[in-house]
Image (cartoon, rainbow, N blue to C red; front, side, top):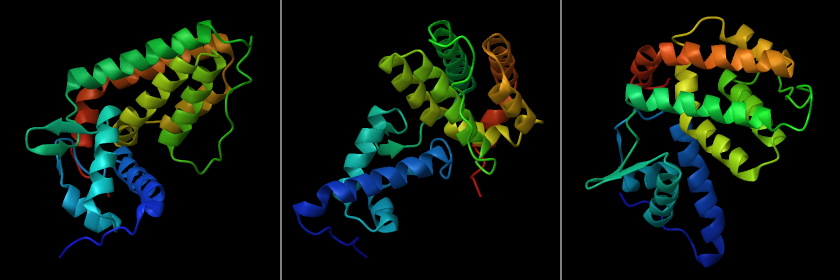
Length: 206
């Protein structure tokens, strides 16, 4: 059965943004395991769109490194242990750089997100706030991209690490000196747990 065709150029931008947002959320939440093939026709049917905006969105997501492109089409990127260690380590270094250039003497810029938010969203709000405090757009954009690429891993961490909630509460309440130390501990915990986190990533999300 063919996916329905979109009507006219007037709807092109809204359709693309809807498809792009839906695909990005699917990837961030780990609803497709690493290495899984992303079939544009099947996705078009699921998203009630034509294949063209789905392909366009997949290409944009490939540019953001949320999708891998191979000879047989689009895939969810494969997370190897070295890859994930490097992402955690790079994220840590960027946050330390942001803190060295932060224009505030205390961590009053840290967010106060709603308590019902998922821990992965809490981490993203925190790390984005730290990046913005450096007043450097490139740094903030790089951290935002890492937030997207690490989101599925951060959701998988909950199956591996204990006391994540308390760890996040401590980060959100820290002053700048304590925050640097806590960020080091936060990232070292995850780097040490990378083998278990990678295994959790290969279990489909509920």
